[in-house]
Length: 294
Image (cartoon, rainbow, N blue to C red):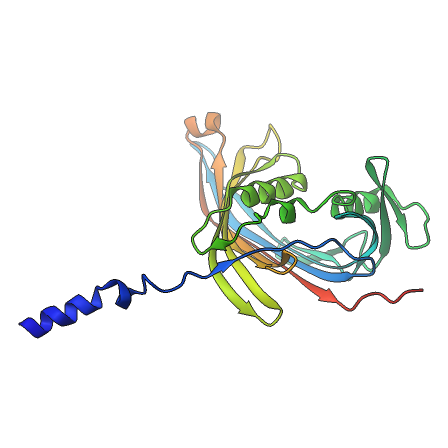
């Protein structure tokens, strides 16, 4: 009996549980951008759902959609001021939006696909030209300006990281707020991000140096228009990978189930929406060799 007491005492002792083990922390450093530095960003967004809307005295209405957006771009720093990039080049790879319509795959290339642009922060706004310095069509300009909206300011997500070390389990509200603001800045009209949270869950040894892995969650609500009979809700969860040296975001992966919710006035009249859907987003970023000086 006594031996079992000793064994159980060892099993639950602080030493056995690792309570006295050193808690590993991670300190994120920040570096000013460098002219000539390049990074390749790849994004893949997939959304698919299959729902039916029902209401008294009407036939069920199918609500079916499937969309995949694939985007690749190479971002090159051309000029800096302090911690801000003021001029940059963005070269897009092949960019497609793939939709299923009437059971058939329809592929639509983006207006900026396989084209190169230059953006420069001037007098409080971003001016976009093609690689030769000539004006570009409005449809192309809107996309490029969205991608280069950070010119002229320090990256707000990087700036939000604290200077003190973080340990596993720490929540970082400033980073969550900055992440939510960045998502909201590029969201289409009628879409909002709410209750965003970011927590350090792992300190990883990567070939490029120490990396923090953060759990990320946010709630996305979208209403196409005031006349839309339903709103869309996605409770998305995922991870954010950030190299400690320079606070470099290398990967973002998020996803979650899609819900379609009838507007309150229609719900009171008996409208219901049943079915299922899923959304997934995966973004990766990697550093490329510096651009050669001309």
